[in-house]
Length: 260
Length: 316
Image (cartoon, rainbow over all chains, first blue to last red; front, side, top):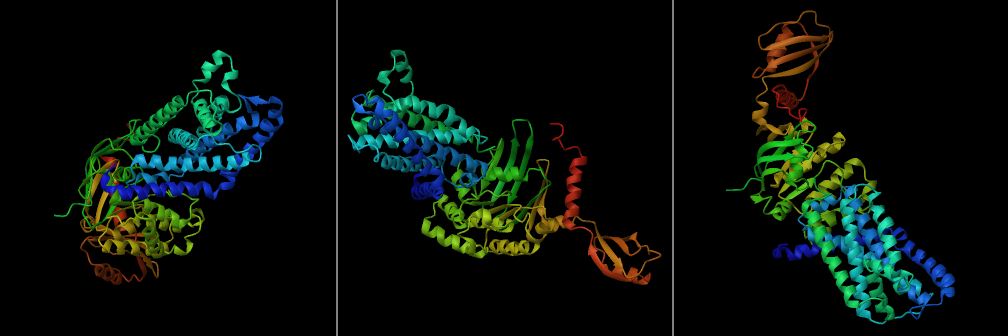
């Protein structure tokens, strides 16, 4: 990136982020509202009806235990789906060319789309948090941990969504990963249970799931309890951000999926 | 010395399936010129434009825009180019003004100034009143004009238009011609590809014809048209002509009882044609050119390439 064009680059980045935020804000009934309704149902069914029979998990009321996981579930899926659908539709309608012919560096294209994904992830996460207040008292153990983990997790999945969007050629391609990879990993990532309940073998397998570290670190930020070392969770999240960003940059620099 | 707006040397593009879209083309477009790049479908026009605007990766060759090398100074190249593509490629679900304002933002133009420029160009192109409407609600002609406003908002020195008047009605096409001529007069270089050869003849001072990935002609419009050795006119008669007069440089043939065609050698006065017809008692009601002059040359040149066996597309 040419330092002489810092101001122009900043304007370009702002433009992409504003465009991305306006995109999902214009269709908030499709983008922001549904996950809040879905999570309200989770709270009622899993937290209220089933949770009342479960009792406690790791010494915490079951309803309170699932709140951080469900917020993270909403953040992860919305950060991912915002970027994958926006990037793919910009390829499909060919308006990605508006960016490709402009002098915006690829690094800023990535940051711009990720900014939009993070904005939606956090907007939905905030909405789900408000919904959770009807079912569980608000608890905050560490604001810095809570905010840093939720923002960094959102960045990870926004980047992953972008990479999916780069490779996607059909609308099926943008739903396969969320359906067959993301949702199972999230459900198995300790949203509804503590991994300490699992037999040793499955505990070991679970530890290969990066979402487990994210959910646990976020739960620590809100409730002060976690199954895993916080430093390890941060290390994994940062490693994913760096790895996925570099991969996305290589793809765009090579023109994969966007240039012939 | 001013740098050419665009200089292309030995540009090649081969696709993975072996198809060679460009076979080493050379092209120079002077600053300030209104340049036509013509060719039949699949000739390589859009590939050339795609490479210059960095939407397509080249296989080899060199491209410079106002002296900036595409390989080493891609951002500077991009800053200097505005593109109006063949296909609509804006977000249909965005308001008209935002399409233009966002494009300005990608070029680092602050939002306030971007809005002022959007107002100017959308106003010039008759779209300011539609600024709040979703782009998808515009008519085809309006969508073309929106893409022109978008391409101009960062005030590029080189404007590339890939068939900008396709599907546009005649009245609107003429107003777009006037607009393009005005911005060319202001010093902006323009490259135009079009299927309307009348459009190229009317607007462009320089022309290149590309066919099967090769430049088959690159000259001024005047010298190209001078290559025409005959011109054919169609004559509608008031009454049937029974016998046609003969002349060395004017050849007449009957199409039907009331229609004649006349091939007139270059340099021959039309007055001779009318004297000839008058002498034979043939009264002419109206006259028109059989084909556009450029069209005739274009067909001749692209057919020549085919007949010389330069077409390797079928072989590959």
